[in-house]
Length: 252
Length: 252
DNA sequence: CGTGTTCTTGATGCCTTTCAAAAAGGGTGG
DNA sequence: CCACCCTTTTTGAAAGGCATCAAGAACACG
Image (cartoon, rainbow over all chains, first blue to last red; front, side):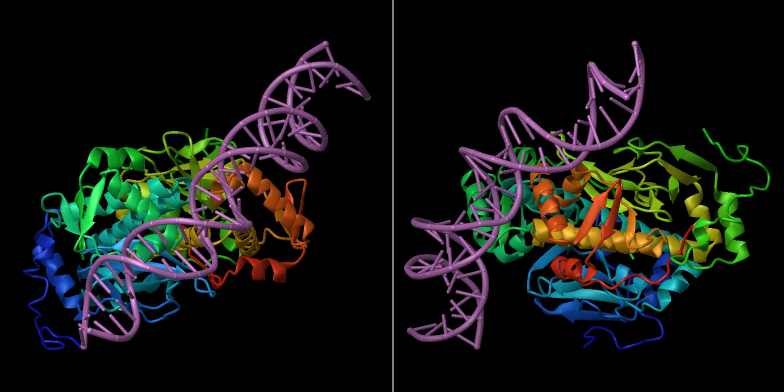
């Protein structure tokens, strides 16, 4: 399963030269912290699109950093209704809640093919004891995720279909932008309309019609799996999105 | 403002004999931890119902533990639409997100008259350095809050009005129960129907009609500010609520 | 070039919202 | 104890946004 380096080389080449960490979305880290992170990293795994990384109810989920690709957290009812809670992009932590609470109250699924850095849940405690700075950053990332979910809750509870879609689109656009994933106002947008629907609490049909309406209105266009923002100002206005962006953030 | 002990007595009598901490919802704490918490506690404040404890955008919010009463986190759009994100009961941490992210992306309002323990945001970092155990518990509480929000998001995104109300009622019932706030299946229920509506993403009128329908169906009754669960089984079935409960949890 | 998935489109119905206004509570001052 | 005012709860009626049903079109893939 681990395609990269051998499974437990004494000194991992991991992390030291992590290209993801260089992106401007992230803080710089001290060599000491990088070393600690590297020593904690237990695996580098590839997960194909559609496969679950953490399944609901799992009680031994590890902690991950999403290294490349997209994923999403979700929760489902027994009759099949499913809610996507939030999307995960490179640098995002996965499984913190499951690690701390000992059981995953949600699932995480790879939206695209994905690479993840695996950290043993057991060592989360070590991290709090030995690297308070990193522990603080982990908590920070947890709070940031909560903040994103808050925004989704506001969206689903108060915005109509049009606003919800505009809001989700910009939110993802901005996150992608911070990761240098946007070029010429366009970025990879790997969500199917069913994903959109599940994330927005709308039916597939209504999502389709509203999404099409916004494209016709010139807000953005979508082709070959890429979305291009044509009218940022208008999209923002419709989204009625007021949260300021985050500055740089920690990365584990 | 601080009605209780004098404002910075060398050794606070605070925390040592905290009656809230004795409740079965909470972990036991070592004397050392209690001492640290006590030394960190900077005030004990009373806030009247309806007043904001943290306001949206605030960048110097302290960290609080809700000592008595109820509160709620919320987020609003500029046109007045408001979403209640989650309710806070005694023992819940408030302002962690604001402390870590440096700015509150949400507000917190006292639902009833409330008493809060105030901890300086500045000292959160000390806590990570000097008391990893407590830091871990803070992170744990943060994750638990996220988990509650996840559940709300599932509710609002996927459940219909009837299910949402049933779901919220049991969820609050269970939380109150863990705090020994339930007697004879009845507990103080300080939410107005407008609060219900704002929390559930429904209009006031429809909330009223659905709430009344459930009372007539014999799920529960409501009088003099108290709600009494008459048919727990049925309420649970309608809520289609599957999350297991939390065991004991930390308290700061 | 089949075959299954995802996207579209049209039609119908209902859950929820909106508008309006009356009824019921709660608190205060005379 | 009652008049008065403001907030919260109820009810009724009408409109609309969104869900559901159905089925065809466009893609993706082996």
